[in-house]
Image (cartoon, rainbow, N blue to C red; front, side, top):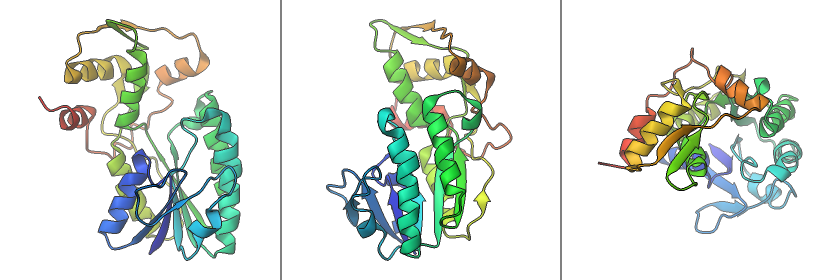
Length: 256
């Protein structure tokens, strides 16, 4: 197959591209910064630049691009950009789009998640035959959050009660590669990590693996989305599909 991977240089996209190519398929990358990558097209979902070139000759799309670090451009990239991508894909006779989203986002009052729900609605318009897979938060995102919350000297202040079910992006990528080779199937069952953890425990594991001696303190956040995180809105405990635990991820990255 010829598969376009949007966001193909990102945390998830890199794994998707590697797995597609190692299994004999063509993976073309669409990225705003494709320099140094093979079979890559520079493009921007927000403006449409490069999309026609990227879509030419493609059978399917794994749509992993998102405005995760450009929140002010979220609607332009995730919603308008997805609609533009799909309209052009239909003209190029692309047969299947696989859209990756996030477990539980329709139950959390967080602006980025509202944008992702709106992007899902665009995909569900059936402009191109579609499949949506929602996954839980990545191990790498746990580290990103903890890095931000531990910037003050000598302490790491985290909301102890937040609940996550972290999953390894390589396992989500493997599932996406399976899906793109099948017929469009609509919304699939959620894909979750192997364990439900509170953020206090996640932070303790991270500090130990990093050999950091910071004092861990609770950070209460009187915000609606914070309460919803603590309620477990981002979990899918009936779908513990991933095998790699957060401790195993840490052990691989920070060997003793």
